[in-house]
Length: 170
Image (cartoon, rainbow, N blue to C red; front, side, top):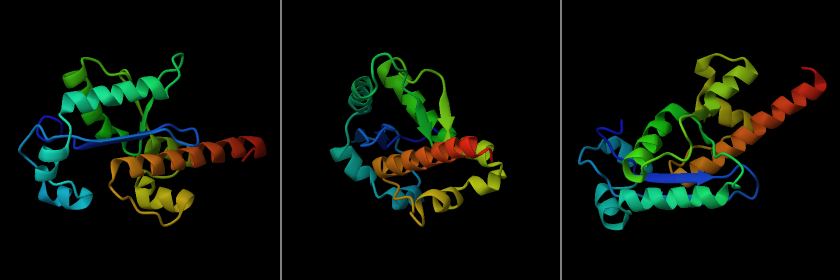
């Protein structure tokens, strides 16, 4: 949770291909961390303290990127696979370090969308189930940008599958 732990990196991309991308690593704001989490993403606290950006600069860069990546008449939409987890950090950091959140007060969860479109049980919305269906045996790298691109590809496949089922009446 953002009150106890730090947002360590942000990766984002647009849905259109080729994807416009953004990536930044962030200095931790808390000294608490889970060693097993650092083992997954490979960003050590020492590395981030030295090479990560201060949160206010990282968040400003992200806001600036959103401003250039999203056409001025369109609203940016925060979309993620397990959006409730990622959203709480992004929303908190935007409000804490930027004063407002360019995404507003909502996020779209790919897992929930998949469940609604496919009609499966929640247990079947895990990364392993959904990615296998759309992008093969591809595993999460836990690099924020790489994961964002993979999630965008899955969302595009889900939306295309839904469009095709509308045409065929299935």
